Length: 97
Image 1 (cartoon, one colour):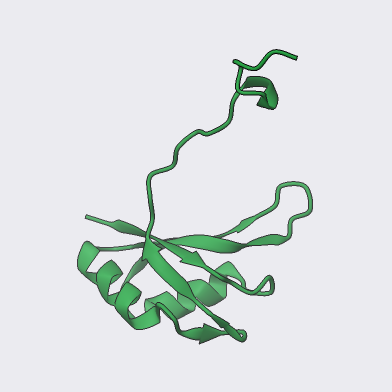
Image 2 (image 1 turned 180 degrees about the vertical axis):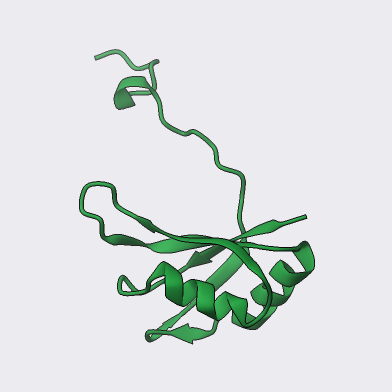
């Protein structure tokens, strides 16, 4: 069973290929994506890596959390499930103006 990791504190110059190569040193990487701003295309400074197994993800987290990449200490943690925090109109729907 695969496991997804959050990778934060990335330099804006870090690419998905660099992250894939780094995590591949620990185990098999199923997917890797640095998240970018949809308007500018610039990195948002974080991404996600999906490892082949929970054991490999745990090993990657232990080995790579805090490791320096492009002068920044990586933050590697288990990814949390995506939630939809957006509301209609941005006002929460309950406020009256």
